[in-house]
Image (cartoon, rainbow, N blue to C red; front, top):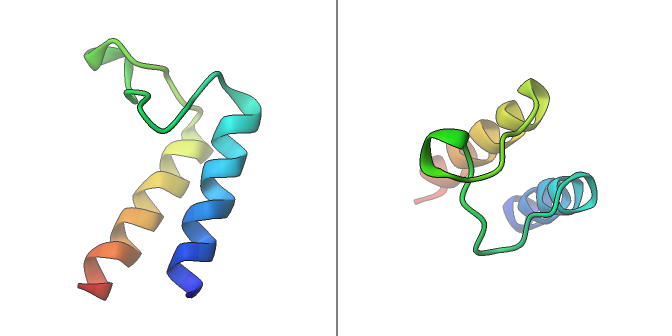
Length: 54
C-alpha cells in the first residue's frame, strides 16, 4: 500500500507540472518530456522501491 501511495504522489506531481499522461515517454532521448533533476530523482526512488518489493 505504501508503494502504491508513493507512486500516486509522484505521478500527481509530474502530471501537475507537465503535460504528462500515463503513456508519456520520459527523456528527450526518446522524444519524450524532460524532467527536472528532482523529478528524475523521484522516478528513480520509486523504481527502486518497486524493485525491492518484487
